[in-house]
Image 1 (spheres, rainbow, N blue to C red):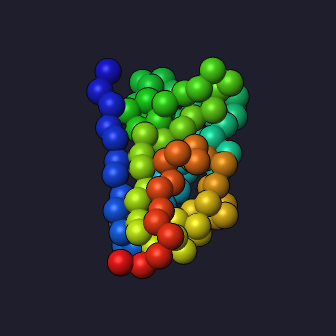
Image 2: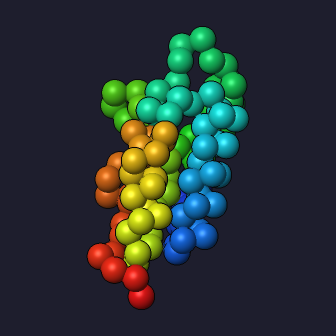
Length: 99
């Protein structure tokens, strides 16, 4: 099995990355909290979503990604956005002030 890790850096990278992960979730039937409903079969037959997501013991699908920005506001938008439960806090890295 192949695995893909995404690294999103800077304001544009974080904003584009957040949009991409929203699209990946929609394409693979994964909810904003990382759960996949039992009635979903999108991408399940071939397990293709495992390339981009890792599954936890509780059945939650977590993106294989890291968001990094020196300025915290854009990463904070991800932390408080619709898909905030999708990411582990260690995946959202920000500084305290702008460069």
